[in-house]
Amino acid sequence: MGRTLPSITQVFLQEQESFSRFRRALRRSDQLALDDLFAAARQHLAAAAYAAHALPFEVFLLAMLLEEHKEVLRLRSLVEAAQSNKDA
Amino acid sequence: MSYPVNMNLLPALYPGRLHLLLAASPARHELVNTVIARLACGGPLRILDGGNCFQAHRIARLLRRQTPNLNEALADIHIARAFTCYQSLALLSETPALPLPLLALDLLTTFYDESVPLPERLRLLRGCLSQLRRLSRRAPVLVSVGTPAQNQPNELITLLEDAADQVWRLETRPPLEPLRLF
Image (cartoon, rainbow over all chains, first blue to last red; front, side):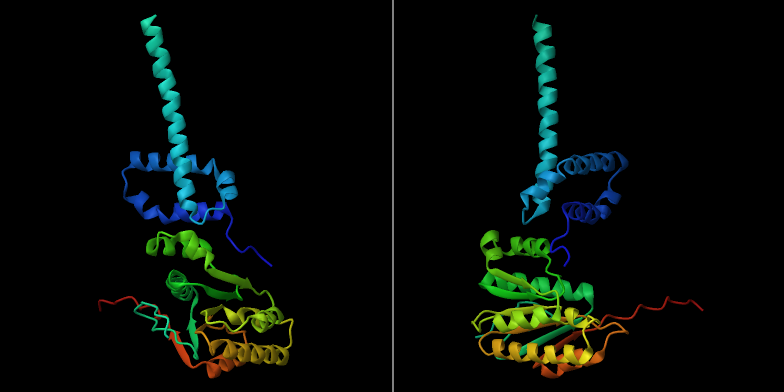
């Protein structure tokens, strides 16, 4: 008896592959940004597997958004720290 | 009552008829996924997966395009998997004849197991066909099979084709020869 569903890594690679034509049409800087987004989603494959969502790509998108939001929070704290230093 | 499958390639499925889809792998799976998604939007259906080929994620994606109630539609799909030809017959025998569409996916895959003698496989397949006939009296039944490889016996698919009321055969076009200028 084999797997009844592909592993989350297989699904992720399939999804990434399905955007290969889109990626090819982007300019180089945008390709790198897109690769960063997929790399961000890849960090959360274990959580995506645990979620067992019917539409895994939605989880990948959320994982990308999560990493982006973490970056926003990090930058916000930097700006706030710089602002407080400036005020002081 | 017919179960409309609103596609250009496949006509409606009717109770009392045993439908057979014979096609090579990518096209077969794509067609079957579309049929499953269409039927699941209309109500419950049963699937017997003989080739471990039920593509849940792909079907979920197709369903999402057709209905906002994805989880309800997915819950209407009742799937059972068989990993041997004996299990295929047992599953079909235990399936009650309800007015719900039944799809037997890659039915012959388990019958290509060479560790079971061919006469035994033929006997089991006849039993499966008898059960499919019983189930098709109240609901449409669609059986999908792939084109057999060269080393696989043709008797099995011939038996299935003879038993089917309607056969849809999708043949892939041979690769075109490159054009020559001269």
